[in-house]
Length: 206
Image (cartoon, rainbow, N blue to C red; front, side):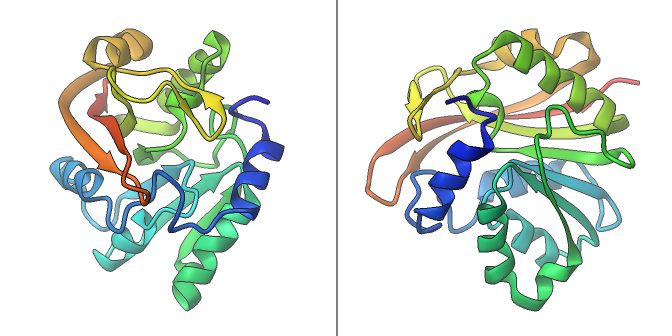
């Protein structure tokens, strides 16, 4: 089973309580701070990649963002989010699919990912991710990407992962992106386990 296997993630989300998965956060505080650091306003076009049942979209709507899109392989994950948001879910553009190969109708000002990149263990898949990131952002567009840190877990949800630090993320994305900020977090899962994450704020060069 691979990280971009829709069957795998449908099974995970169909059997999971969104508030009990290991990566659950009440509020994605670091992601929100890094998004704020980009200087983008409520009119920015935002894409949440591998949105799962994350509350990031809730927070963005609460901060007045008007053009929020979210994509995930799992339809079940998106349905969890839609149910949680209720009537507000109509303010989000939901997409089911693979962000590493998707051709979006228009580019975005911000690409956010806390759930996709570290699952891509195949080199070709990582190259597809980097290419999609570049073509999906406007020139000078921003990316906030979170992965397991170099001292983080080696597996998650039954899959192997690739861990990242500043050198690794820069090597993957190349000269097309400038790394502006790195932050680390020890995430405590709902069961009390520690997971080390790295957060990267980057900007696409023109």
